[in-house]
Length: 242
Ligand code: IPE
Ligand code: IPE
Ligand code: MG
Image (cartoon, rainbow, N blue to C red; front, side, top):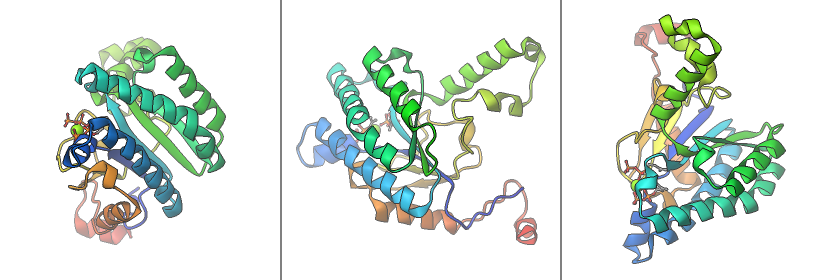
């Protein structure tokens, strides 16, 4: 079925980039940008709920971000931990289902416990599913899904369809993103959701993540609504199916 393109995107995935540059412009340490970035996350979650977006997926820490200076990695982990401690109750009150995707085995036990607790507490919520991608890499996701498929169906070693992989991908619970947003001016995917972005509309903005807000989200959604998603078909076919 060709999905209706001119409505609100069901699933928005965002690469929140530009925290460091935001801080640098103000002659502040990079951590100030990350702190301000948390406020932009709050504003974006609120705006998604108001607009009826069902799934919001945020890239918070990539599998490559371990390569940053140790003190920045440690500050990012502290911010993540603090957000888990302080924000989850509020998310729960607002009907948000909280999920984390990525290889969390590398995180401290305390963070892993907080993640498990937050996921369990909010599992039945249905207003918005908020997914945080943490120590996530798109290639890792495809590789781990293939491993799980082969473990469950050894005969898949002789070959399998792309659809056979779907149930083992880390976002199997969500539809594929309709709209991808990257802030910070860079136009690349940086190993975010690779498999799932196959037919996602891409939107890039020069705004730095700490400056992203409800209006910026509105501009991205407006751009999305002006596009025609053809999924391989002709424009005439898409019109006829309306
Ligand atoms: C994004 O902002 C946040 C993370 C990657 C954790 P950056 O920290 O990458 O900011 P810039 O790209 O250096 O400005
Ligand atoms: C992508 O941003 C990862 C996150 C936003 C978490 P980066 O700033 O790490 O990406 P590159 O290094 O510029 O590609
Ligand atoms: Mg960056």
